[in-house]
Image (cartoon, rainbow, N blue to C red; front, top):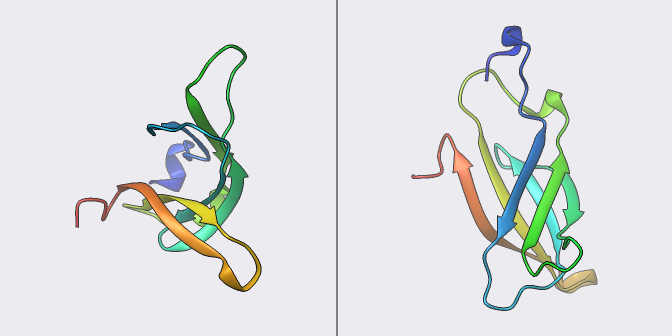
Length: 93
């Protein structure tokens, strides 16, 4: 990411591929730090589980960045984060 370019990838969008689509709570991590939270959604008459989040521009660093989408499971003391996928700098590492 190059701040001087005027383009910051602040809106993240995508789909969750699942055999059992359902509404789920999500966290979005940029470079290993939670930057946004949200939940999946469905468009009317559609079974595609979608996601969208706005991540603050200040979250990104110059150069390569990694974004990870995490499902928030459980609650209270039993809260867990499960990776649904990652992309960017270290995604293949």
